[in-house]
Amino acid sequence: MGKQKRRAPAEETARPRTAEEFGDALLAAASETARGVRGAAGKRAHRLAPDFELPAEAAEGARRAGHLLIARACRSGWLPEDLDQAARRRVDDFARSFVLDTLAAYDGQRDDGAVRWWTASEPHLPQWTAKHILTPAEALTSVIEALGFLMTLPVLTPPGTATPDRPAHHVDEKKLSRVRALLAKAESSSFPEEAEALSAKAQELMTRYALDRVLVEAADAGPDVPASRRIWLDTPYADAKSLLVHVVATANRCRAVYDSRWDFVTVVGDEDDLDAVALLTTSLLVQATRAMIADPAGRDRAFRKSFLVSYATRIGERLDQAAAATIAKSADPDRLLPVLASHERAVESAFTKLFPEVVHKSVTVRSHEGWGAGREAADRARLGE
Image (cartoon, rainbow, N blue to C red):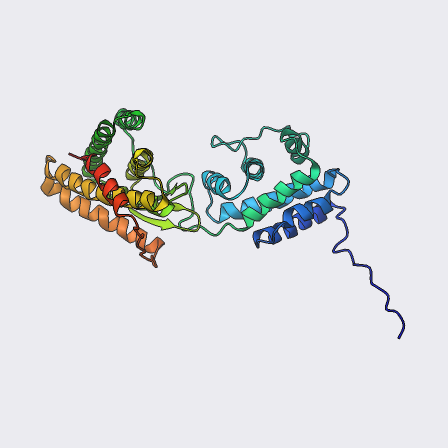
């Protein structure tokens, strides 16, 4: 038998030459990255820029690919703030920066962090590469990772809307400023009892304002259409933190559902009630985390997660009591109760249409000490009293 000749390995693909080919190559590499192929972004980037040069066609190809995927994300209900929050959790700072720049180029200059800082007369990618002091291969690696991230984004339910579908309620800025001031003091206080009393006062003000508002709006002829908002949660213990969002939402006449894939909670309710949920949740998360870390027993994950679950559970109980007490003290409870019941039905109907198949899951508690400490911290709050 004669010797078999060894075949030279065939090149996977020829190096792109046009902007369209570069765009297709970047999307193909991004697809591998989105599927979790390890090291795909770096390997592909070095093949696309082997001579440490960034071809002009590559810049245009990156712009086209980014525009395509950003447009798809926006059609799928992703708002700029959602894209930023998701990118911050899934990719590094370079890829996140490219996502925000691509968003700014797609939708113009915005007030939410996505700003066109580069010179419009020159391609974006070389300017972005120089700004971050990257080599061409490093820049394309980040571009591929950013595009791969955008490919993983699902269709959001409900889709995000930059403005409500109905005219926003007139917000009493004086009352809202007072609530913010109380919560800011609560967050900065080094005394747990003082912080929690300030939070209680803020909740009381928000509840009174909401009850006054629903009575005024009860005379309106038009139906009250609930809106929705996403609240993003940081790890660790995002599932335990989502329980706190849930109880605050319930106390403020809203419904909430947690998406564990992306660590955000969608809250459905009246626009002003959504404002109240966002304000109080943010403050309580800061205070709960501070109290949890300050506890000398809170060193392990089981304690801290149990602490947060217990804290949220007890806060929910106290908020429900506070809401009932505030309604009982209102000037016209007999008129208020039917209005609140109608509001609750509207929110429940909207929530069910958006999330017809919600799955209820429990959060496991593994530390008796953490549960007790969390409940004690929540008891000190005296929320609504």
